[in-house]
Image (cartoon, rainbow, N blue to C red; front, side, top):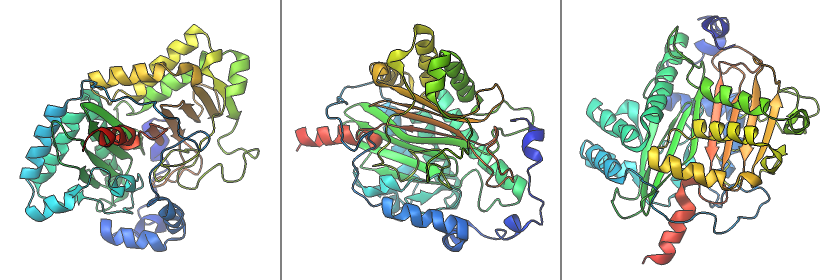
Length: 408
């Protein structure tokens, strides 16, 4: 149900207490209010102990698989990234530059989050900068991502502003409700990176030895379009997921589908998180143990493998051409160690959750209940998607450790 009528019927009345109670708050006052709200306060308290933990990486069993990631140039647009970063730094005041920059392996990498309330004021908040500084920092999207990736990122930011306009909460949700940070010093030769995060968007972009790693990423939308008549922003991922499931045999599908309902009584306690819902690899889950589940790709035929390739390609198309090609090959090299799991209906209009997981990638897509829309059941117009690089290479950290081991 991704059409306009589908989401518009769930708009809160303008005098609803859910909306009225937030009017007049900006990012900082809402940040404090969220700590004391029964729902968001519990989320924050649950996530808070996870943030400062020393980074290890997501694993399937608690043990990092060594030597999965090799330092090798992958066509990263390093020169364009450095040029954009240098221009951004020049547009900032000395105090802003100091606030923006952290050491290349700083724990602040792990402060990203996707809710609308700001938990960590890492780096600089775009909405509070002058126009030249904002545009210069946003130039990093075009310099780092593929054209379609930069377009999608900006569209999701605009949808956030659209939702703010629909609800009358523009000071909380607008096109610029995002924090940007630099890690290390922009360089053609030394490791560095940058980060942007906020409501329904998070990108962690690291460059090590001419190799670009963008992970973790979060792309989401509520609703999944910007204007009446627009194509939904994330529907291609939904379509590729359904095609992948349809390519399984009945027996394989039966194995892949863990639960028939998005909220199933058979689920173990805690399987649905109040904020992440069915997602397992979201914000602050940098060291989570996520066991493999579902059907193993080693059992699949050629057609299903082709549908998986298309699903992966759609999920990683935010990467520029060279890094995307290298990442696709890296993921395909581990197809026989890849698992596909599904929760929810399997019909053409059903909402669902899918996870594709291997030693080198986790891809998740989940349909969610309303946050600023009133639907109490997961709906097709509220989508969250996540990409992780398990076994220690989120934030390019495995490559960084290799680099540091061989450079003084």
